[in-house]
Length: 180
Image (cartoon, rainbow, N blue to C red; front, side, top):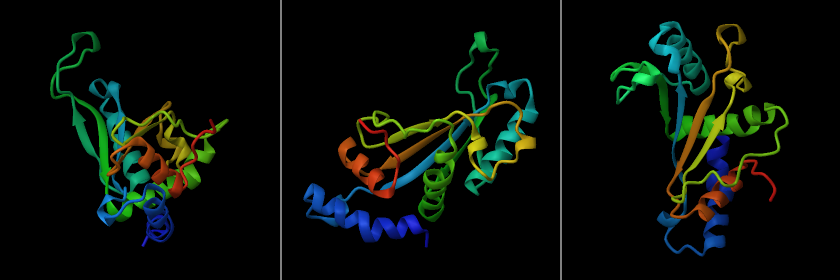
């Protein structure tokens, strides 16, 4: 079992019950999934970039990514409907907690001039989105195989009804939020 999952069960769960005075254990916020997305806009012209993004995403998340295709044609971007534009992975259960632990303890501290993640990146429904400018902060990424800087979007979906409960959940798990 992942260490972060044990921490949630033993420490964070009782703390959230006490803090928000929750009667039913099903009301206690939990992380339901983590979605990682790499957009590769140049993939329509260079298929090698899409393959590289797939390989790097598989290395980072330990799960095979899905190719995302354009939903609409946009002439200004020379994009047609159905063209590949990125890769996506949805993590759940054990892999989700393992990825979150690596993100919090290894990857985020490697960001240059890191002062914490933004507190205002919640969506109003208890979900948190974080953008990583360069995937080279993950130790699983091979430096030689990455061409240029490749960013990644990470969305943490929770069962929390409000941002306050989600913030308390993520802070309890060790998410390094900025000081206000």
